[in-house]
Amino acid sequence: MKYGRFLILTVAVILVELAISLLLAQKYNLLLLDSIFYVGLVFSLLFIFFSRTGGLFSNYSEMKTAASTLGFKNSYKLKRTIGSLSINCFNVGSFLFFLIGLGAAFSL
Image 1: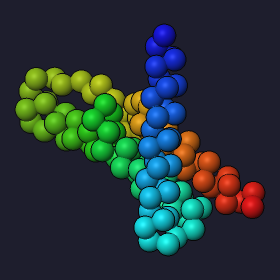
Image 2: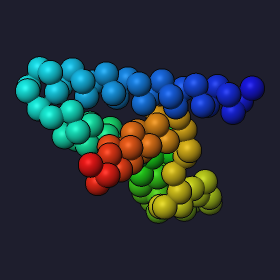
Image 3: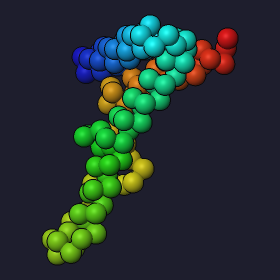
Image 4: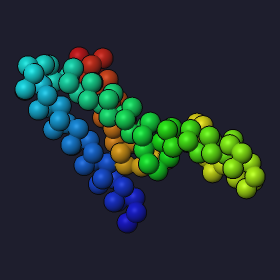
């Protein structure tokens, strides 16, 4: 059941990003492929950097806490490293959407 919910939410993220791409392509008279590429890139970067469940920004702030004197006095242990990312449906869905757009661009 856990994997089914993850798959459904990942597909929902891809569909929402496709709807945003269609809206931008129609509103600003862009090619759909350009819109898919830019929306996929922007959402991938947003979710990777600002994900609350382990994005790069939260990893950086945790490292700053561990390196501070307060973290040193309390012998704070890091839960994550700089390269660790949490795998959630938003990260996977937006990255897959970006890869689908990139694959479609080079296959045409």
